[in-house]
Length: 201
Image (cartoon, rainbow, N blue to C red):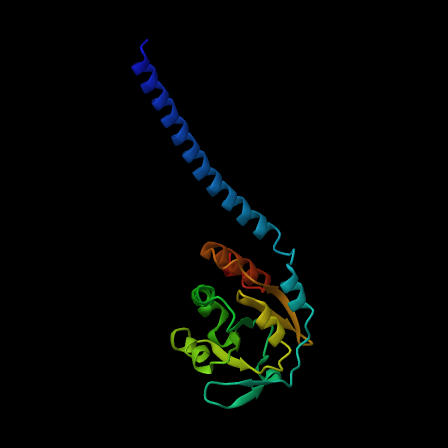
């Protein structure tokens, strides 16, 4: 066998190896992401530090919330039932993550009830916050800087879902991995099941 044939055989083997490595890397990436998703969902009750901090908070029912029309209400007056779903966001929250969460909530809005979806925001620019209501018809309230939720809102770069139980304690808090939209969907379904919305399964 001459050197020219050996050279072509060598190139062919290298090509096969490169293709094999590419296929392996692609498959491994898909498997790795799938494994991560399963682990995250399986360990839904294993809270991260931010979620544990949220679930340690007892809200002040007398704190003031600002409405879009400029009027204000006390937090206690909007806490009507344990079916309410709260979404906490701030000026520090990833914008695309906010829209992912609002969009996915819209999928279940009829089942949950639009009046039961409450978005709480801590924003310097009030207009930016209330503009969200133009597309997603939920209930929007602006938090004051002195709110018991302000520290939590500023610490989180992702939106934070939670529900509230008597006596004004935060429960089922979770901050979805909103970079991956399908994880946001899976997390939200899990959250709604825990909040007694069975048709979210």
